Figure: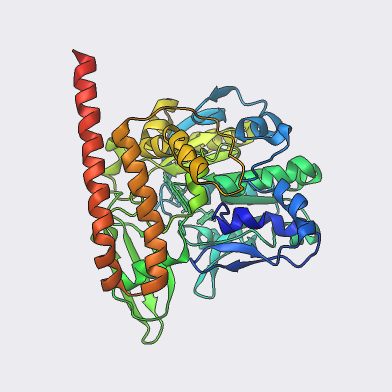
Length: 443
Ligand SMILES: Cc1cc2nc3c(=O)[nH]c(=O)nc-3n(C[C@H](O)[C@H](O)[C@H](O)COP(=O)(O)OP(=O)(O)OC[C@H]3O[C@@H](n4cnc5c(N)ncnc54)[C@H](O)[C@@H]3O)c2cc1C
């Protein structure tokens, strides 16, 4: 457990805290701005690892997302190797919540319905807390937009299984893939939580960021020193969906700073400030949730700055909520083939599923007493794509170590320049390679 954490194979879900035998463990920010467990005693090792989404020795019946989906989503009518078990796939938005949400407002709509229809009594979601963000219990359906918007900020569910037994009624939870997997692991070992947590809203995730990401954006936007209420996805209704802004409040003078994200360049393809563990996760679409939600990064939707959601329903209940919303006109959503959803996350599928074998091989060569992770995908990528992977791993690592050392935006950008340049050159070569390959294959 300690070794996994030291080597960065923890995304901070915090479910292990409820399994701590010594009761001494808690989550705490590490030097790179990620939340990780501390005070781990030898006796905590086995129980904690069993609910860890990155456990290298899982029991066979919960060995990966496929095994877990057999336990929880066995009656889903369709299955796909890339997106997992599902009922249907859709694209669209909620007319009421789109404006105040990050994509199409479907997450807020679903949570409002779950409370309204008394399917659950409470939500456990990410919400503002003292100027930053935290998982909290919430049940105010009249103020539901308080829970909206994507927060690219480290959060943890450390208190979920410490508190949930004290709470009357049922709870619905939102989470990214590894967080949802940790909840499913807990439910697999403690079946009472299957009834207590009857619905999981999956947030499609391209990688979890450290708090350095937020600090870097605040500094890039002109905020000096401390800041609060960072907003990561401010929409521009006069532009396209990718053209969103970051905003925050400088604490010392209460000045608001806002900046278009395009000013800082690509923050996802570079792996900037991303958790190491995310490079060893193959779950692109949060395969174990009742419903999975992401952005419709497709040419036909990107032009609309108001934002559009891709939706994968995996349970019958989730599918009914979407279908009811369509028929009572609360949702402007249409059914779309699964390939459209896959296309909307194509870079993430390539990185997470196609390139995992190569990354695992590099990991295998450099491993230090950490067992090899079992992986579901064994695809061979091109030599240029391998070079992109190596450069991306370096850029990710350097972004964290340099920000930790410098905490100065000018010096940081200067030092990162050469790594970004190398990554750009490799990415261009990979694109060229793909183009030539396509041409040769079409002849
Ligand atoms: C770290 C991260 C990475 C993401 N990467 C991608 C990606 O690569 N591709 C893609 O298509 N979509 C990605 N998303 C999802 C996307 O940004 C939207 O959150 C999603 O489309 C839902 O939009 P919505 O308008 O329906 O949600 P809204 O109606 O705005 O509601 C937002 C919901 O997300 C929950 N939430 C916000 N932040 C977090 C968090 N950190 N952890 C858990 N729950 C949270 C809130 O509790 C709320 O329920 C990512 C989200 C996060 C948090």
